[in-house]
Length: 335
Ligand SMILES: [Zn+2]
Image (cartoon, rainbow, N blue to C red; front, side):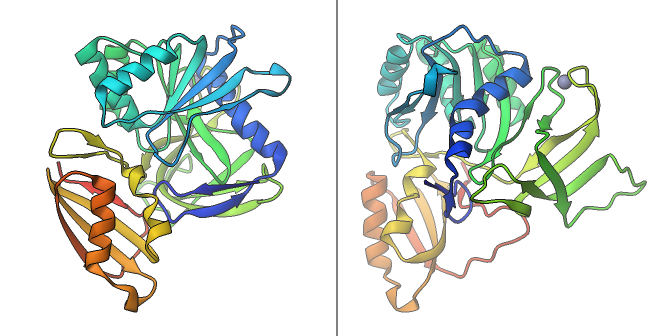
């Protein structure tokens, strides 16, 4: 079984061993909930609903084997259409479910919808992962939605790596993984319980893809510390840099998901691209082509117009994109 990865980096094909896939799909959400202390386990038919704005994803239901944890439902939400979002939330609320998993941008959307329309999903807790969750948004979501927010960090390659424990002191790194950092930042007054640099992961979870010191390109601050949840000290991610994903805004005021551009890799033979929203109605596309002779500004602009669908000024530039130490920022908004 293969899954593709690539929220912020180049898409990779990841081979999944069946048992690993099963664990990742059904058990990791429950583990996150258990560690956070919010797990209820009231035998809901559907345990988790995953909300996605990625137009390449469809509505899907994964039935839990032997009904061990409850089923997993993935639902596509069109973030450009608020009344449709309200409709989706109303439909979901007819179901009995415990957890809701989503990206920070969708959490922000749910906060705005609740403020405008006074409707919110009936989840017992929200699991937020996929990109950096700012402290501001976490607080705002807790205050407005009145639903606990659990932060988690994972990669398609290894599954969930870390999540908040009950005392919320950063994200606890799971015991079956080994972590280290590359290009470690040196501090005055060396403290062996603190590390900062490019996160390296060692994982034997997936038999089809054992990884040793795998470079994630996420810049992290790690801290080894105690808390009341565990007997021994745990390494925690106390800060995560990179993996920033923002939605764009169109002239009509509608949100536009960055994930709508993922299809571009299938349409244009390019190594990498970058989308920059300079202001409302104005985009800059930087394209790093695989083949120089295929540089066709007009053709690329037409493809982009079809994706964006609203009248915007689109500038296309061809440029070699250099990767720096931190995770490559494919989507940037100056709004
Ligand atoms: Zn704790």
